[in-house]
Image 1 (tube, rainbow, N blue to C red):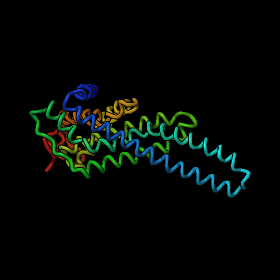
Image 2: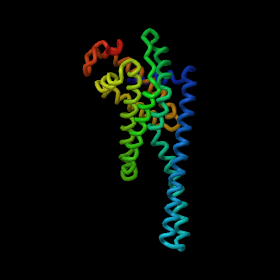
Image 3: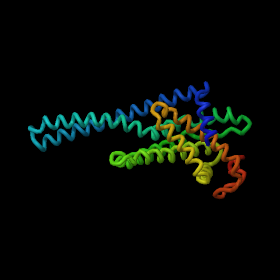
Image 4: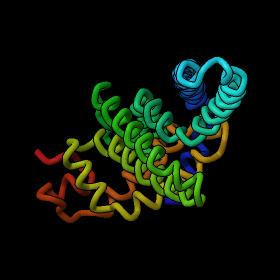
Length: 254
């Protein structure tokens, strides 16, 4: 696992990875900005509309105090969007990563495993489905954890573990599906859930570092390609009805 992480970090600085890194970071930044602006506009409209309704209900004498309340709420909204953007990075990187998984995987396979048969590129709809699904679940968990962050701080632990679980699932499944059918890839991941989750803790630590976390798709996908290769080479037993040959990484079951 640590060897896979080291190789992923090492290759991220290589010239072939730089173009993917730049594209990934730019798309992540654009996504965060668009989501942030959209949420701010919506919440600002909600605040102003609520103020107009409250003034109509309370009378004209409430105009000044309500103006102060709206002003404070607008500032709180802006700060909340900034902080929320940090916590939503797992969701953003899950979505962004779905556009570059095959490009990243091909670079890793060509560099470290040139003698092995190359993986089969995933369809864009499959990659997007996995990325959007992970992003939506991450947002749901963020909303559930928010009260715990405000009350006791347990939400930070929940978010960290959730990021490890979700991102490890997504990137390992995408790496495995280059060589296995989706059902078989998921079965293989479940058979190695402890190792995959442990690797996910490293991805969660990576995604928690500001600015650096924009490169999470490269790190996560590259590491899971290495991890899938390693696990495929040492698990010859059958899992969920798939053949021993497929589980050993010599190709999907027919």
